[in-house]
Each structure stands twice: as C-alpha cells, then as structure tokens.
Picture 1 (spheres, protein in one colour):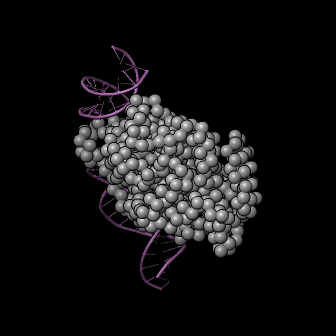
Picture 2 (cartoon, chains in turn cyan, blue, brown, yellow; picture 1 turned 135 degrees about the horizontal axis):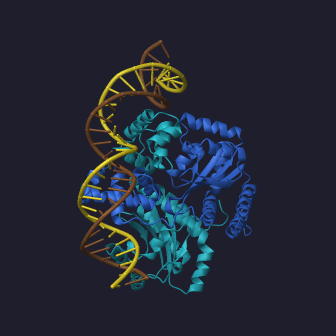
Picture 3 (cartoon, chains in turn red, yellow, green, purple; picture 1 turned 90 degrees about the horizontal axis):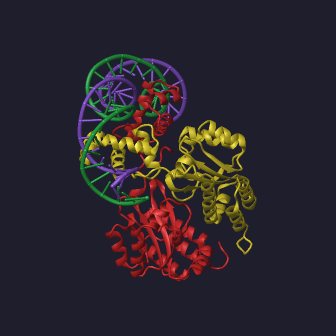
Length: 240
Length: 240
DNA sequence: TATTTACTCCCCAGAAATAGCGAGGGCGAA
DNA sequence: TTCGCCCTCGCTATTTCTGGGGAGTAAATA
C-alpha cells in the first residue's frame, strides 16, 4: 500500500491482525523501539475504576497508581477527558498539590518528565488514553510531538479498536428493533418532552403515545420510561 | 500518492490554520478534488436536532434531510453511533422500510450509492460523522476505502477539532459536574430503579434523593428525570 | 389468503414524580 | 473565618406516569 516499509505502518498492520493480548504488547514494544521513547501506554479508563491497559510502565507504578486511585486526581486523565485533541502534559493543570505530588512520585518510579497523551472515545461513553512518555528537554519533546502527532493519533485509534474487540461486554446487545414511531417517542422523551408535548409533536393522542412507550419499554426490557430511554441511548438505537 | 508533497498533508495543514468557515469548506472541496469522489461531508450530530456541517452535499438534500428529521432513521447515523471504527454503508442495517426509502431518495438528490463514514467523538458526548460518498461499483469502492482509510480517519479527526474550536458553546464546559450522590442517583435511575428503590439502595430518605435528582436536573439543564438521565448518559457523565 | 406487524384510539384507578416552601451539619477553599 | 457546596431530612398539593383492560384499520409478509 505504501512505498517502502514504514515501521509504523508495519506495526499498525500487525496490530490489526493481532488476536491475543501478547500481540498488543508486542506492538507497543515495537513502537517504543521505533520512536525511541521511555514509555508507551494504552490505558482504558473505566468510570467504575476497573481500568486496564497495555504498556511499558513499570509494573509497580501501575499497581500503585491503581491502588491509590490516582485516576481521580491525575491531571492527564482529567485534562484529556475534557479535550479532543492530543495534549502535552506541560499544558495541563498541575496547580493542585495532589497533582504535583503525583508527578514527583511518578518520576521516582521511572516515568519520564515529558508526556503526550491522546484521548480516545468509543461508543457508550468508552474512554481511553494513549500516552507517549519520555525524558528530555522541552524543545526536543516539542519537536518529537510535532513530528509524530498524526501518526500517534492513528496509532491510538487502532489500539482502541483492538481494545474494543477484546471487550465483548462493551458491545451493546441488540434487542428487537424499535418501530419508527417508538423511536420517535423515545427520542422526544429523551430531549425532555413530557407525554403531552410528545403526543402533540407526533400529532397523535396521548393514549396512542402511551402504547408506543409501553411497547418500546417491552422491547427494550425496561422497567419504566426513564429506563427505556437510558437503554435506547446506550444501545445506540436513538441518538440524542 | 505518498511522497513529500502529499496533498492530504497540505489540506490538513491548511485546515489547522483555518479560522473561518470558508477555510473549512475550501478544505473539503480540495479533498474532494484529491480523492475524486462525489461528496465529502462533515456532520455534527447534535442532541436537539440542531445539527450542522460542512460538505458538498446538494443544499436541497441537506435541507430536506433536516426538515424530515432523517437523522432519526438514518442507518448511517445510527450505525456509526454504535461503532468506533469507520464503516462502509453497505455493512449497515438497511432492513427497515424507512431506511431503504431514505437511501432511494438520497440517490435522487445526487448522493452516490457508495459511502464510508467515520464516527468521531469529543468531550461531553459530542458526536459527529465524516463521510465520503461516491458512485461506483463495490470492488472499486472497497479498494478506495482500504487504500485511504487511515488518511480519512486522520482527516475526520482534524475536521472535528476545527468544529470544536468554532463551537465552544456547543461543548458545555460550563456545565457543572455532578456530585457523587447525584451521579449515584442518576445511575440507579438509569438502570430502572424507581425512587423508592434508589433511596433504599443509597440508604437515604426519598426526600433526600429527590433533592439530588432535582439538583442534577438543574445542573444538566434537564426538564425532568428522564431528560436528566438521557443527558447524563449522552454526555458520558454516567455509564449504564 | 391468512397472519403478522405497525398504527391509531378509548376508559379507569392507583402509583409515582414534580413544584414550592423549609432546615441544619460538615468540609474544603478563598 | 466566611463562603459555597455537599449531604441529610421534612411538609403539601398538583401533575404526570403506569398498568390493567379492549378494538379497529392498513400494510407488509408468508
């Protein structure tokens, strides 16, 4: 596809073929060699705290991070969560005492002083980070990130794709499809209309509307309207 | 196609510099010329249906699409909403009558029969599509998408970045974060509990629970509980 | 043709949610 | 220390939703 063998392309191709966790780890190590940086980490951030990832961080640091629930105070996670574009760690908010302590401690564990993290988002609010980490001065790091930003974004995308493949419970179970009217009803309810408003908007009686809501609720296996709307959104059958 | 003066790189660079809507439109037109396809469209899918985008679709089709609220039934939107990786239109679910009618009508308006759409997600549940559209046979289209997939993913990313820059008000970063109790309450409501069950689960009185729900509703700008839960889910504040 | 599916309409009674007031203690940041 | 936010609990009245029935038309499917 591309002229001479670009090592990043090669890693991406290998990653696409990977069907084991080892394959992912191999890809990360290969990338680290290619970019010649201290660490590369893919980190799935689950709001429940059940995070996991692959990468080259020292194991004891990863354990400590999870044990201390640093997720909650890590400016990298917080900052990436509210951004779309990759971000240099220097540009994050390290003003809080806890953040600076975290940073100091991470260096003790062998984490580089420079970092560049890419936020990635999937369906159902899935969120992950792809981070490149190194020890060098600011100028050198800026050159590195400027040069490799686009490739890193792509790499992050492919890592997340693999992670989603390996996480079957994250794929929404598809139930009976909703009828157009049912979809309309749930969608309007989801944007805050009450029954009277929805019925008026759809030009049907409130009684009819109720039938739709109930059948939608039944199809979605929901206990009430709120539940039905919640399920419809997280299964992606309506877009709000 | 991939040498030093890569036209896609040039377009991306121009896009990064763009500070007007015209710049974005120019970038889209340039990309269409480069890829030699019928249409390229960036489409921000917004909650209240106040969608917008840039692209080369005929204006009358865009108007009709919005007027008819085709967003609700478009398999491209629904399909991308449940996926992470780009998707060929052929692989979507066109089984519903409304979907097939939409497809037939779009062709009348000059939309190509082949399409490839990339879902993009930003902070606060922001969601957009980047679509390439053409008229050709399946083999040719498959070759095209296989060849350009990675570049298209990157392009989609940069378009979304620009869109986010231009629409700071669309990403409600002044939306107050929910307190832990508020999150708990909404989460339990989203999985189908009623107020009594939620109150019991959280070991608080139903009156207290009500305060949480109301304050969460206020913070999320929601009209009722269902709306609040819907917003919380689509903004990624809670995960169900 | 027969059957299923979607869409539309109706009644009633009980359960649940909402709107509007109120109060006090705790904890962390400015 | 004050200010703001979070957590907790209380009352009353009104509106809205839910659950249990039944029934007819049109269109697609088998």
